[in-house]
Length: 124
Image 1 (tube, rainbow, N blue to C red):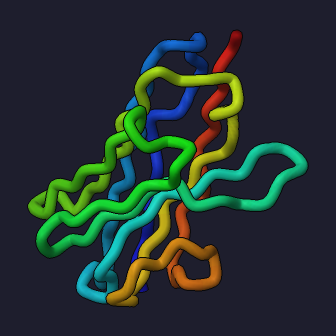
Image 2 (image 1 turned 120 degrees about the horizontal axis):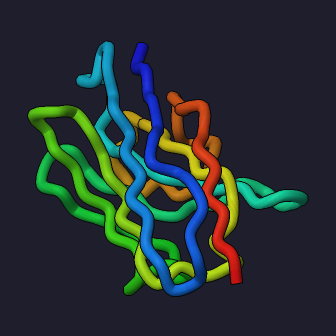
């Protein structure tokens, strides 16, 4: 089992920044890729970004490319999501997720472990 705990959400103004953290514990060797998803009210959960523990290869949704940066600290088994140039449409609950898959998992069903989520609200 892998336990994931997100932190760092909150309120930001449009154009501002926030950094989310996801601390992984337990059998972290059971995960190969860490991802961030988000779910806005009335919408389905959508992929935001992902990173491989080994090598650090990153993947981004087109909607956040150039504004968000995913990174990891292997020693701390923590993944970060730096969000810059925030827009009101970035408002959502952000979830951290982990998977053992070796492809490029961008769908919710491809992830095995999930955090509880952290709210991000961007005001205009």
